[in-house]
Amino acid sequence: MTLYHGSYLEIAKPDLKHSRPNVDFGIGFYTTPLYEQAKKWCGKFKRRGKEGIISCYSFDESAYESLKTLKFDSYSEGWLDFILKGRSGKDTTDYDIVIGGVANDKVFNTVELFFDGLIDKTEAIHRLCYEKPNFQICFRTEKALEYLHFERSEKV
Image 1 (cartoon, one colour):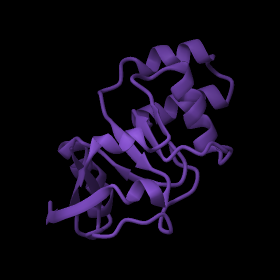
Image 2 (image 1 turned 135 degrees about the vertical axis):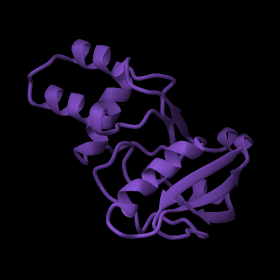
Image 3 (image 1 turned 90 degrees about the vertical axis):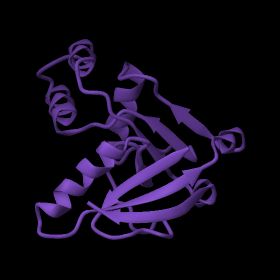
Image 4 (image 1 turned 120 degrees about the vertical axis):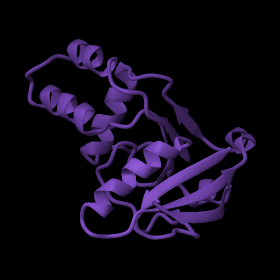
């Protein structure tokens, strides 16, 4: 499987040291199999006057057999609970890889409404069902990163 990471620089050797806290699936290296999504991730850097660079990787999916993996097939109550823990820094799970939808700006607005008690969990899930499909794979351990192999990068 080919995975992409959108940034302002080439990342030939991904690590966890440069990961931000309080993001969707916790600290990790975030990738996507969707090229257009990685290109969109580059947009925030380009708006700041930096280059947009997509790093491309190969990933052998048989690695899932030896890694502790959590996969969300859709926006669901379980996904929302996990996002809430990740975004609030309260995730204590030990997954090597977490897979699922991205909490983009529109999704984050829904999460904020829920946090503020303005909508309940049922309404939050209902709103999330209408979001444009997106997908991320978060490599959360060094062990998981061993299965990710840099192929090339390109400016966008």
